[in-house]
Image (cartoon, rainbow, N blue to C red):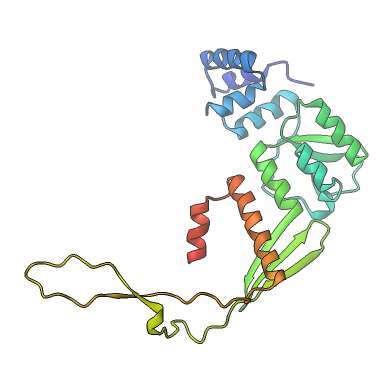
Amino acid sequence: MVNKLRLGDLLVQDGLIRDSDLRTMLAQQKQHGGRLGEHLVRVNLCTEEQIAHALARQMNIPYTDLADPPPPAMSKLIPRDKAMKLQILAVGNNPFATRVGVAVGDPTDTKTIMEAEKVVGRPIQVHVAPALALRRAIEAAYLSVDLRDEGTSEFQVTDVRGGSRSIKVARAAQSDENPVLSDADLEPLPDAAIEDDEPPAPTPMRRVAPAPPVGAGSESGEEALRMVWAMADLLIERGYFSRAELMKKLRQ
């Protein structure tokens, strides 16, 4: 039986927001449209997790934080493009269940629920999940990347069906950790400030690493690098890490 309390009333009852906050957000919702929970998250009055918990109570449906990713057999029940478009993910451990659990971000969206049942091909049990956690779980369920350093840069791309593809990027061999550089590889640094009572010091030199040989990369290597950087841009856009953090890790 659905709880008769509205979402905002539940949040007030739980002490997460005040009556005045609710009135303000309802006015914002009336003016700009959208859902109350979205407005509350936007102004940091509530988190996505708190909204999802309240919706689960209001609609008497299960809540899931998607901490444990579903097995591949469950992910196969929903095609990747549908999962991404509708933001839905099959959950549980039994792909042959009469009623399949499906996590959604907005359980009040009846159109999405009906489309999910059509895609799965049988009745579903709606689970509510925080929107960001759901998006990340969908990405993890349908695409995983394993990076290994074994003398060459190897990129292992695995899809939800278990198929995998390895791409190696060859790197120029180095004789040692600090290669010997010729005079042509050295360039002077700008003159340093000299104290009046100090004798002039020799102009310091800095080591400049030689440019990689032309043609060292292969067509497959370029393809792999384009794929990795495209995926890195996607992860940065989704908030997994910043570009500065990525560059710092690469330098290490």
